[in-house]
Length: 161
Ligand SMILES: [Zn+2]
Image (cartoon, rainbow, N blue to C red; front, side):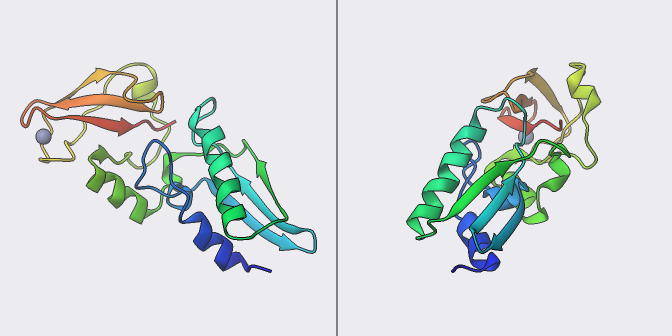
């Protein structure tokens, strides 16, 4: 039977379909791994209620467990406490930045964004503060689209919810 550490390693290979550089572990989606006589129990919390990516993530976890020969497992989804961007690991935030997405600012919730009042964000490419929000919804409902007025590059911002 696989150990908790092995399960965690396998989950490191399951990536967020929207941000393919982040694993579900980096995102902080995986809340708990328990192993008992019945098998492996994985508890996950969705990043964003209603985020269509969550079904994909659960399917991907199932596929990964099967691929690794884990036959008895279940995936439980808990909604409370709600996921916050604070759960993204430091490594995950660095990966987001390298990928060209502005990492979420510390301490959510992001009330400014929720009220459609754009926040001043640093461009992940050139570091300029001269950026503006182009659209509340970016490439997916979980992100907002920003554009940098200096390097003219658009970038996604992971909304803090
Ligand atoms: Zn820029």
